[in-house]
Image (tube, rainbow, N blue to C red):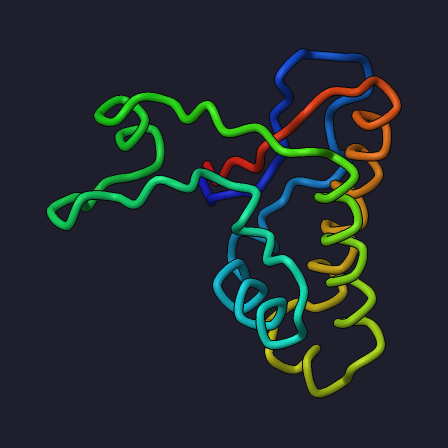
Amino acid sequence: MSLAVYPVFETPFAHAEPELGGEALAQALDELDAIAEWSGLTPPGAFANSRPAPDDFDGDPDEFIARQGNTTDWFNPDLGRAALQALAERIRTSPDIAREISDPEDVVAELEDIARVLALASAHNIRFRLVIG
């Protein structure tokens, strides 16, 4: 099973599931965070668990949650949507940046898919966070 990036919401609501799996995002997350920071954008990782893993930790995300407890950080969906859309646009319009990512078309599609779901969350005033799992 591969890792994926997906949103979770403070309050569940209808149509909260992205249509795409988020695997391309998980695979490219370090590159996406670097591209966003270099471009002056908010990196996708800023909307994920903000707690650093202990130096001796070498497990998967579920093991981290079991050991440290779940995060309670929630984010404004408008900020997340804007950040993900801006990053998708940056990748789409810059061939040099797109070459830094192994599957830029899939990454852009997944960024836009999550941004679409965050627009729905915004309409319901529901905060979110990204999970890597």
